[in-house]
Image (tube, rainbow, N blue to C red; front, side):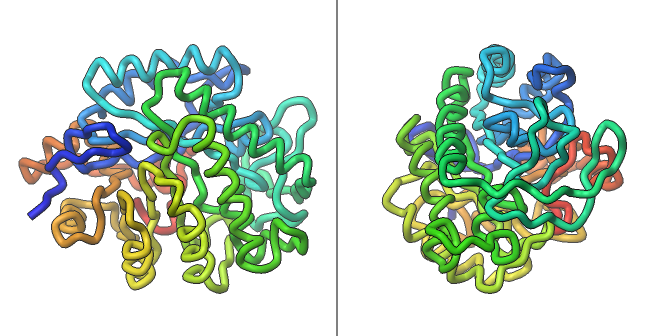
Length: 356
């Protein structure tokens, strides 16, 4: 029987176990350069016993930033600063992927430089507020991306992936979940386009497919993972038929031979099982556990074949040596849910609606 503590090869790279530190959005890249700090190097190095670390969301371009003080991968200074982080993790024997996260319509002009405005597939504002340095602000109506701007965004993702490799990352995870730009193209209420980037299922999945393809062409498929969250309503998402849309998406990218697919699960376990069956590659599962955080019971998902790897968020936040504690059966530090599920947006998962 396979367990979470058995090794696995991911994209040709051996991992010591099947435990993933889930990506958790953080606002710690203080200063105008949106560069990671020494504190971030310490943070990730402390958790290097994970089979795989996936970083906090990293914007691939200035307009891709949706929260204050989040880091980027689009300037030479950011690349140099991330090298400090990856070197620290590698010294501890860890493997680390950078999560590339373009937030799209989720954000506010006050967070962006040079008079930029958030963008999206359509000029439809999300309901809700975003935290800024001046306090919470209502989401604005995004600028609808033109064909040329969509093409530039694809280039931005590919360039950021190249920068990640230059910075020493072992690979990248493309964030196609949780109400951010790629998810906005997939969803019914945020993508009202009638051109080739919207409308029917084929149009809705096109942007996701082309982002993945561009990144694979830039750095190789063995260094690329994709995160999805079918049916997730976070960030004002609505999807009428996620089974059809995500089944089609997986069919289109199956031949790209990605390092893994990362599913942020909703309450529909049947959909999880269907997507698991449809995906022949490595399947990473961040299970639905709301209102609780993912705990030791999730280890059974490896044993029963529901997943090849299991991702932990809050428990990794509170327990840097989580693999050792899981082997021993505890004890576990209790995550501070007040901070984790929103709080001041420091050390917080980007999926508070469904746990982590």
